[in-house]
Length: 108
Figure (cartoon, rainbow, N blue to C red):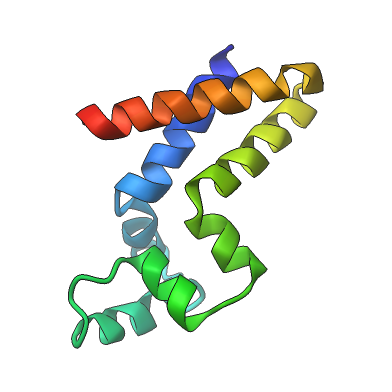
């Protein structure tokens, strides 16, 4: 059951905060994560988010995966269910975690 909250937490941090960007800068990973290129691109497109930038400029399966909320939720949930040897719980964990994420996203 606690897995659902971890999944929701990860989705919220990834999609609704700039924690990844800030920690990448803190640990000197902005080049690896192309944050420096995104910041340069934002000068002429100030409203573009980091995930939108990745989807536009670096089109591949991985960037599509990490910028799609239901897709990323699916893979995080599957990974956590496999790790915890509770694959039978996968459908419920997926639906509940995504529902919780949408509720939190709406009210926070």
